[in-house]
Image 1 (cartoon, helix red, strand yellow):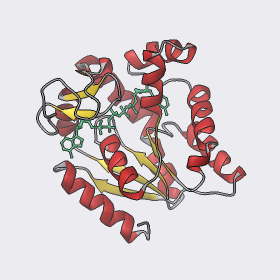
Image 2 (image 1 turned 30 degrees about the horizontal axis):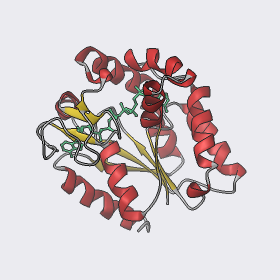
Image 3 (image 1 turned 90 degrees about the vertical axis):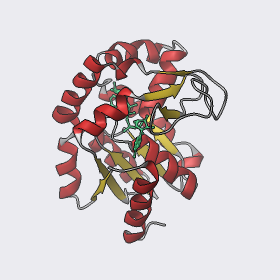
Length: 218
Ligand code: AP5
């Protein structure tokens, strides 16, 4: 299974990618998670990425393409992977295509998750993430068992710095200008499927599994 999860910030693609990854035992590659870990560890990559992320801008294509190339070369990705948050620009998509061509591989499907702007704002403003393991919660829709504490590792739950209202607005503009063109890009290649991301996490997951099954991916 080689899938790309596409969609505006906060539509729930990370949540759904995680569920699909665990159901089908496929590795999930989230460029956002990798960049945030680099920021936390104050690596050279993290220092470079932080300024862009805090302003809601994209990190350079060269940097993220390098990250994904390294990840896809790992043996665990040989039999499949789920890309969450990559590609995000047409040049990134072209680089991905070259990477896969060089291994004689191809994408099975690109799933574009669709949610209203109102839902996006509610989902992002209430999101809380574990400072240690990056597990994702929501103050209303995915509450942890103990407030402020990660169910998975006991770490502290925090609000992502780019989930502040002004930064969310900036991320949505960046999405429209730089990432939304990928919808047509993949539609023209016959790879695009659209998924209604409204409703509870469980309802969306059920739709996702049905969509994959309809594509012969299960
Ligand atoms: P990234 O981390 O990829 O952020 P994003 O694309 O903006 O997506 P999000 O993580 O905000 O949202 P999501 O759709 O995954 O939603 P989630 O499942 O968490 O990127 C961050 C930054 O890194 C970028 O701005 C950029 O600077 C940089 N970057 C990353 N990749 C890059 C690339 N390829 N090129 C250049 N730069 C890059 O859900 C959101 C909330 O809603 C959660 O609280 C969740 O619990 C809740 N929720 C989920 N589903 C539901 C549901 N069905 N009902 C109710 N609540 C729900």
